[in-house]
Length: 273
Image (cartoon, rainbow, N blue to C red; front, side, top):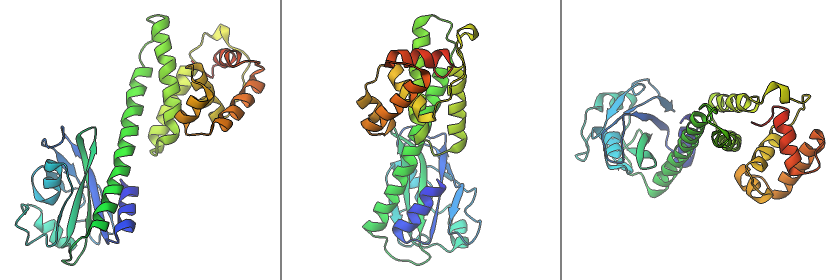
């Protein structure tokens, strides 16, 4: 959210940006609330912590309609309600736009950009604000996918070979997601779970410790799921030649002559589940 607000200000030239995520929002158009948690360029703290209900004010209108809304003069506008006039006036804002953050048809937040003078906000400002909202949407989508996979991967694998294969698939998906996660805490949590899954092999089956680079493990996890080099490259955001290089390096370190041998050795070494 913080990075998106900085991008919004740079892309629009607006001096103030702020926003927050929803609590209790349902599908697009359903009720919810946005709590303003991040400010960029603000001169006061009047907006921080403000809870905007669906339908109230400019942000509440954007939340309810699930589309961008703007006013040239916030205080004089007849198109919005005025529950938050005091906070807006304290910050000295006049022209304001609000863009919803929508993930899988759920409104998950609202980004605002504002001027301290009553001037029309053109298409350029609106387009830049929407681009910033798309950044937040992508980050939330990746976080949701990661948490879903974490939950699946943490499930007990004592239900037989089929369940264990599901855990291995989840492990590969988690390794592929990790580089896309901006939140360092969530990325660390995800990789920690990957490590626990990888070390779940029977101790008696363990081989001597082998040290592989993170990307070498990522490539092996894809190979273990049956992915070709081209598919692994697409999943990891790498070039096929780069995937081949990581795979050759991993095979050399593991003393393996085939892809299958490499995966088996990596599992015995506790690098893959």
